[in-house]
Length: 272
Image (cartoon, rainbow, N blue to C red):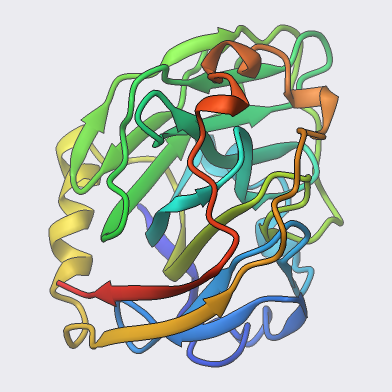
């Protein structure tokens, strides 16, 4: 039966509800008003939070026939560089967003390393809202290269494309910490709140979709916010890990078409 392994509330720290996974380190991240209480935010290249290592997360998507995680995310539409922005990663897998599709929109992307070809799944069309909070769930069983992850946005199952079909067996991430934030060189502004990791992929597609409604009413409603953030000068180019970057170039549009804001801007969020 599925059960909640870890829950990170990001209410001013990196502690989880499980005493086995408390604390971590941050580089450049900050806390602001989130979907519930506070949220962890990143704004510039290199901003990240490294969660305390715990065996609970080792080979997470390979435990008990697959696992699933969920979280609330807010992405700013106007601050970005073309490329891939990391949301969560752990040595052999990464979850994030393709930045700046046509119209400066975003799409989910997920990659996992295998002994042969690495797996890569994503979309060439916009899947996620911007400038508002949305709920995201990913369910995946990496025990077989033929398995595909499932993405849910606000309770709706999103079809994904096999950008890179994996071969061989999945590689282990045991002993490594989970990282929240940009570990490449792609600038993006977002916040994450109420990250939950579950064991056991025994929920139906409808039950996975229903996590949105469950979590939407599981805590008090969010507060409004108006953070003022001064951006760094525009960082040109794209430098990302080549190991899981194959296939992502097809998602990108020329940098000349991107919206760039390098002056002082307000980060306004109205929770719903």
